[in-house]
Image (tube, rainbow, N blue to C red; front, top):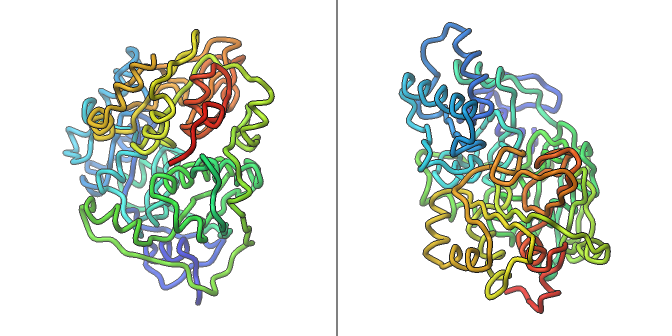
Amino acid sequence: MPMTITEKILARHAGGDEVRPGQLIEAKVDVALANDVTAPIAIAEFEKLGVERVFDVDRVILVPDHFTPNKDIKSAQQTKMMRNFARRQGLTNYFEQGRVGIEHVLLPEQGLVLPGDLVVGADSHTCTYGALGAFATGVGSTDLAAAMATGKAWFKVPESIKLVYYGTPGPWVEGKDLILYTIGKLGVDGALYQAMEMTGEAIDRLPMYGRFTMANMVIEAGAKNGIIAPDDATLDYVRPRARRDYEILMSDADADYAYVMEIDVARVKPQVAFPPLPENSRDVETAVNAGIAVDQVVVGSCTNGRIEDLRQAARVMAGRKVAPYVRMIILPGTQEIFLQAMKEGLVETFVNAGAVFSTPTCGPCLGGHMGILAAGERAIATTNRNFVGRMGHPDSEVYLSNPAVAAASAVMGRIASPEELGLTPD
């Protein structure tokens, strides 16, 4: 019976030959992930189960990335709880501060998530790993506790929608723009509990960093998971990093989909998502014409914190200055990316421009620290959410964009396009 890639992964992990949308299954997990916000709850629930050991010390992964370095006593207590649990259990993948990165950038970089995997994480943006051809989805902390103990989780098999991207993108259009445009078409619940399978010639040409960005944000359309079938680009990324064997799976040509949507990427302009929802995505010219002043610019996060993202922003900032009374914060995804940015002179470019370069952390993305907004302040960010109060005070506003648009906005002091600075893409 023909199946989609999502259905094939779930079938294999459930120990069967096939699954169908709507079917309830129990499946083995390859990775169970938590961070410093969600792990303490999962650990407490795990201990209530009376189970002495996690199912696999190599596959339960704890990443303290949201409030690190610890911002206050409460966050210090939470990471202490994680640290002590990791020590007691002998976990091989607990990432201490100094070695930590933003979890959804760190795990692929470390070769801990691979094609064909089934991954559960107590974080909604666990769906990022679908860029590798894995089934990855966010779960609650109590569900994660059960997965940590048993190595299994219950799922309802999602139906799949197929998104076919074709054509050639225009200037300054990145993966972030494609996914914002898509969310704008679908709405924040347009793919509710569905698998968003992204394919087409434009995806084939999209570099891995852009694919990670797209998979990261499928949750903003309500999807259960997002997925891109592995190809040569995927394997070029995976082979030097993989720590174990993996399986390449593809959708059958005659697999069933709830529906198919085609998107001509030539029609997509750089996007800006207006508050308070990612679905409020509009062409950057709309924001430019509105003259929207900004107080803060954030480049980084699990959505756009990879080295290619920093290169794009640094290219815009080179020889320029952050506008007066504007704050610019750069958040690399991992320590490895931090070091690479230093080697390439990107850190110097940002600092000379008047930006702050941070250690890897989720920080302001969730209103955690390292860039909280006051009442009435406005930010443009390469993060993934712009809900009311997401980055600070409920009376603040967050606009979402790609790194080049964010950097141009830092220079102009208002939402701007790189083309306004006389720049052309590489």
